[in-house]
Amino acid sequence: MNPTKRHEIFSRLRAVNPHPTTELEYTTPFELLVAVVLSAQSTDKGVNLATRRLFPVANTPEAIHALGEEGLADFIRTIGLYKSKARHLIAACRMLIELHGSQVPAERAALEALPGVGRKTANVILNTAFGQPTMAVDTHIFRVANRTGLAHGKTVLDVEKKLLKTIPDEFRVDAHHWLILHGRYVCQARKPKCPECIIADLCEYKDKTPSAPEGNKKRSNGFASL
Image (cartoon, rainbow, N blue to C red; front, side, top):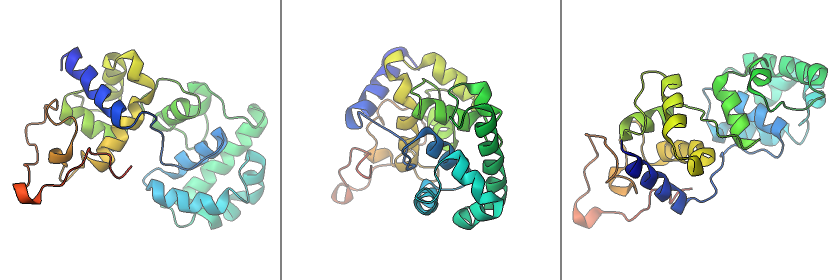
């Protein structure tokens, strides 16, 4: 994909959503860390339902650590893999207390050393909590990047590196959110909403979903649900 087309794609995404952010609910970097760890193989909606119960009771490393694994599990049992996530979060809280003064570190190596935190989770925290130009490639971004031609890659790391190398600097901090939201609501896995897509004419996907008959068309900028 040529640089001019790439710039136009992100210009349009920015125009309809100038200040994108995660759909996970949080107020501190630590709350974000908890929410992102819980979100693995779970929906943001499901995580938010759980953290709305948890955070009013415990939203600091000390408070969650004091709950213990069983106590924390009671708050998050509606989330998939809740037992292992509770175990990881209790261990992560202990490390934050002992090694980081109960503060979430803003360095990749320190984040990835925490139980339950991998590269993607670290990228989300670095980007969303600390404003660093990282790219957390999930299934949505992987799909959108490959379909559109923004970044072809067989692995998430391939796509991450290519996106960071080719996305213009002015869009790099927010690109992660734009691409996730676009994949979640427009460029969906089974049936992408190509007729509603604001970048359809720039996208290099060969199997675009055809437009509906004239009388059945719905007007949308692709972000109406955001």
